[in-house]
Length: 167
Image (cartoon, rainbow, N blue to C red; front, side, top):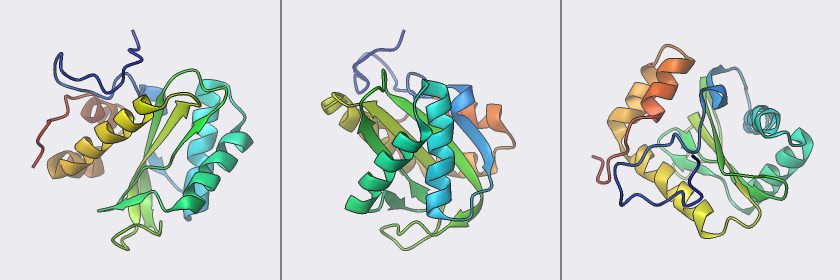
C-alpha cells in the first residue's frame, strides 16, 4: 500500500512508514567520514532495492557536490533521483560518533536520512524531503532518536505521526 503521492497528508497524520522499513534503519553506524557515511547508506539502500551500490554512491556524491546535504542541528539528508529506483525509499542511520558533513551550521552530523527517489519522481521527491524537514523540526523527536536503544525503537519513533507544526 505504498501511495505514490508521498506528500499527500490531508487525510490524516503523516508518517514515514511508506518511505522506511525496519530493515532500512541502522541504529549504530560506525562510519568516521562523510564519504564513508554515504557509502554505507548507499550499500544498504542498494541491497534493499536491488541496485548497484556503486551507481547509487556515485549519484549521491554527485548531488553532494552541488551543496552539502547537512541541514544543521546534527542532521543530514543525502538524496538523489536515480534510474532503476522503483519507489521512494528512506534509509535512516544514527552514527556512533558525529562526523563533519559541511553542514549549514558547521556542526557535525549524527542523524542521517538518505532519501532515494525514482528518476521521474518530480514533485513527490520534494514532498518527501518536506516531510523529513517537518520531522527534523521536532526537537523532541530528534532527542528521542538520539536516545533510542536499538533498531526497532528507532523505527517505532520514525513510524509515529509527524506533527504539522512541530515545536
